[in-house]
Length: 516
Figure 1 (cartoon, rainbow, N blue to C red):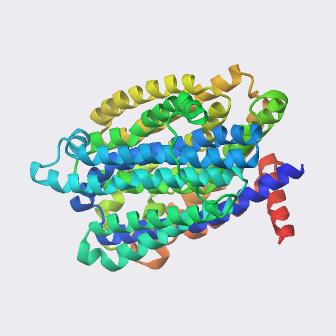
Figure 2: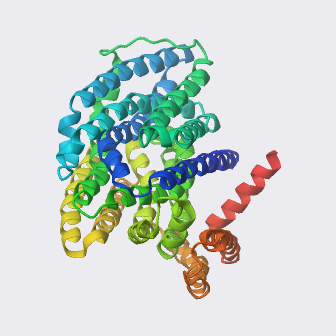
Figure 3: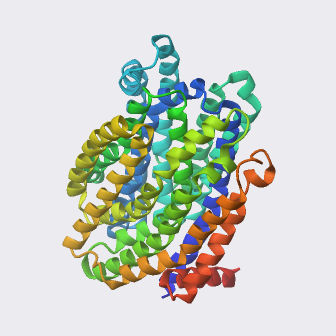
């Protein structure tokens, strides 16, 4: 119970910092929307940066999923001096590889831009290639951030690395706000790269302050590096296939009307807000514990922790997805509706967001399921599923966009991600890492009941707000009381229904309050 209380307190601590970070992240996106809207200029930047950002996302996620179990095992099998020596040697070796990858992307930028956006005008290729080369620097910076954050998480230090995202957002907002008129979209490039660099320095300062300081020494043939590489290819391959969704989306969207690429990007930002705040906070804390309990005598506690985490994410993901589906227009209005983001941008973006609501719930569950599979050593079967999911996504996106138009792109993502979640659950059930007992059905039913006020509130809003006062402050930020009412009623009804997960939330809140 003491450890569960400690995990709960860590989750709420990380959540608080992530909320601040994501609010700043949304402030950044609001500044971008105000200055550039869904203009072709911003579309071109997004198409140019697509390849390096894709590789950055692959490295950031695969590094965390690979390093946490690997370093946890080294830490438990060796002494402190040997562990820190291995930590820095692995980092140095992978850093060299990330530098080589960065240079490769810079050299291949003409090819990458033409593959991702074959339908843009020839005169725009050179500018898109420049964006691709500049954003290639995010590859080495993203890897460093993910590795250093993972190493701190293994030490059960969750708050300091979580605050690193605050650094990048503050810098990016300042640069974009003050220099966008002079630099245009290039201000976004400068702001994000500068912020990412400072974020890495921020994390290095903390990790280097531990035992032995920084010891940079690449070791390509060391035993620990060979072990990581032996499973690393499967993990990276899974992330590559999983992250192709947004590349596939932009491939099909580049041939549609102007602004679709930007609208997809804005929707991605909105969808990832609750994922990064809630799912990230939960899984960032539970992953090191799952890695410690993955085998041996702790297998029973692994199953218990996984079930608890899944039920918690289910109880939080369902109301989030329902809210996004019913309040998509209100969410887009509050965050982006200003400046160059006009009524056409609002209609386009809110229409896409509706069909990403099921995707949101699937991502909540996927976040912990993928970690459980990796902690259990099931990288190869996950890779098979990832290849199948990417193939299905490409075919389905093309088919649905041809027959349904714009909405076919987000709808294909929701369908494929739900199928991936089902596949991962089957693997864990077959391995007896988790049992789908009645508690999951109980959580699902009670969560649906506790979420009914969201539906009633959406109906009420349709009657109150007709759109005639779209320019007023009340209309623009009408989502805020809806969010507050939804959270309060959900927790109260959940408590009355004896929904275990809402009770855990109350208990963790009280535990955090007592520690202050």
